[in-house]
Amino acid sequence: MRYSLILLAAGQGKRMKAGKNKLLIELQNRPLLLHTLTLFEEDPWCDEVVLVAHQGEIELLADLIDGDYGKIKKIIPGGVERQDSVKCGLDEIDAGKIVLIHDGARPFVKRTVIHELVEVAAEDGAAIVAVPVKDTIKKVENQQVVDTLDRSELWSVQTPQAFQVGLIKQAHNKALIEQKLGTDDASLVEWYGKPVTIVEGDYFNIKITTQEDLLFAEAIIGMEARNNDV
Ligand SMILES: Nc1ccn([C@@H]2O[C@H](COP(=O)(O)OP(=O)(O)OP(=O)(O)O)[C@@H](O)[C@H]2O)c(=O)n1
Ligand SMILES: C[C@](O)(CO)[C@H](O)COP(=O)(O)O
Image 1 (cartoon, protein in one colour):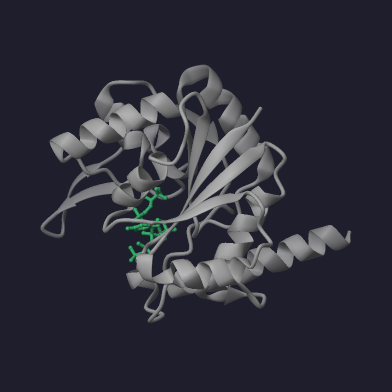
Image 2: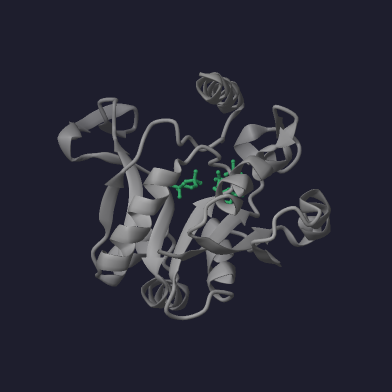
């Protein structure tokens, strides 16, 4: 199987409070973005990568990559919202492909999960990685609990998310026209009226969002290094 990747790196990292794009923060002496890029550069199923960046950081990222990532087809400017950045990426992907959309801020997705996702998307049209929620989730209004949701039905959604490219382009185009904004791409497909299949992932595939996630990330890298030594 083969796929194209849209890798998102055009966020602001406001919640990280690092004063710069969080994807440039170093983990084990390497920018976070390069950890994520390496996963896909080394995956034989990945044909090409469209890297979506801030207009003002395109040159910086090109220098950082320095010709080491041959699968990068283009570095293109993103938009204000994550969804706008994905739309810019989709415009670069040819018809008939399976496209994966992934947060540059998730450097720990496993290749086995990626491959299962691609196979399911090729069959079903849309597939996303998710894990069952571990906490009890309550609905709250004005600091008052109004409901306790049934945890057996709740999943915490990650990326990558994989789609037949025609389907995700149609969903994004309709969302643009009707000004529908979602926090992930699958929600646009759901809103478009098409099914989305869950592939169970794992709890290591964190999104590096706030300062404490950097500690978790260092711990995961340390654990991976120890496992490789065994
Ligand atoms: N306009 C945007 C917003 C986000 N992203 C990317 O989408 C991924 C997930 O977004 P998030 O973790 O929310 O990143 P930020 O927007 O950078 O963080 P924050 O919301 O804290 O500012 C990140 O890899 C980020 O670079 C993007 O490409 N374009
Ligand atoms: C797409 C996503 O990774 C799913 O968890 C997430 O929605 C991305 O950004 P967010 O701004 O943290 O919601």
